[in-house]
Amino acid sequence: MAQDLDSLPDDAFRLVVREWVEANYPPDIRNPLKRLHWDECKSWYFLLAEKGWLCPGWPKDYGGMGLSPGKQLIMLDEFERHGCARTIDQGVLMVGPLLIAHGTEEQKAFFLPKVLTGEHVWCQGYSEPNAGSDLASLRTVAERDGDEYVINGQKIWTSMAMDANWIYVLARTDRKAKKQEGIGFFLVPMNMPGITVRPLLTLDLNEEFAETFFDDVRVPASALVGLPNKGWSMAKALLGFERIFVGSPKQSAYALARLRDLAERMGVADDPDFQAVAMRHQQDVDDLTDLYEVYVEQVRQGEVPGPDVSMLKVYQTELYQRITETMLEVAGEHSGMLEPMEGNRALNPAGLFLQSRPSTIYSGTNEIQRNILSKNVLELPG
Image 1 (cartoon, rainbow, N blue to C red):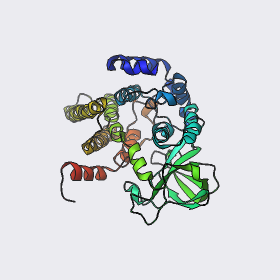
Image 2: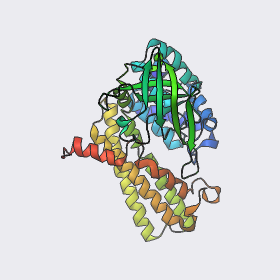
Image 3: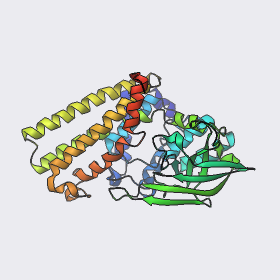
Image 4: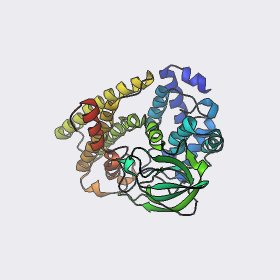
């Protein structure tokens, strides 16, 4: 089935995905107001797994669909269009591809099937209190002790750590090496002695993130993926297409549609001042969509996007914030409500505003993206 799907013309493939999603997606979790926890989104995870669509980018030999990057983007686009919730997908997007590329046969045989069944739910141990966008400055240490590594340190902003039973961790394996070197990539059960998870409450009162502490956590040497000091290069490879995904125009387009709904509700849809602002937002969304298609076409052609793809992330996230700021202005006295107006999910100005705030921070801050563009595209002095 997977090979037949990949051989379909793009328009035909899009129609197949759209029809199946519209017929099968659980309606009670469509367009969720917040990031869903495992108990809330696992029904969608298991539906995808049963269909064989859980891991579109994995090779068929490992239980994936074997889709080309272009087809994967179409599938993501259709999921976003329908308002599908994001599952807890670190095993699918990060751990699976890493092991397929760099894991031992034993690691592949043990871990990959458990991602496909949902037995293993993964979270990411990357960011630290003083190593976020500058991730290579991480201080968590993994020291070799016989047949084990002993991990000590702290991770922060660990998405859904309270739901996960495994975590993949970047830790320093050589303290004397340069900061981009001497880092190892480890696979660690969350129930190991010495691991403590403390949920962090976000502005929208959701426990999506957590602090994760490692105090003399002992793991077998087999928990290391690849070579002891090559974790950084593997971690960077995993993020290859993330900049395209976070630059998708769907967030901004969805927010603009909700802004128009809100304007109708507040009786200002025909106001000339509102129409002028809405038109500027629409033009920006159209420009973003055109720019996004440039990079999607590169992926379809099998090309690896260059550093200029950072423009997508900057453009999309800042536009998303501008649109949601307009929503607060239009909402007036309703702008302070954390719940949707009148129970209508289409009227959720404060919720979308708060969701837009961290978008310029995650996946590398926009300041970092601008530095990438300055140095690698414009060739400006440091």
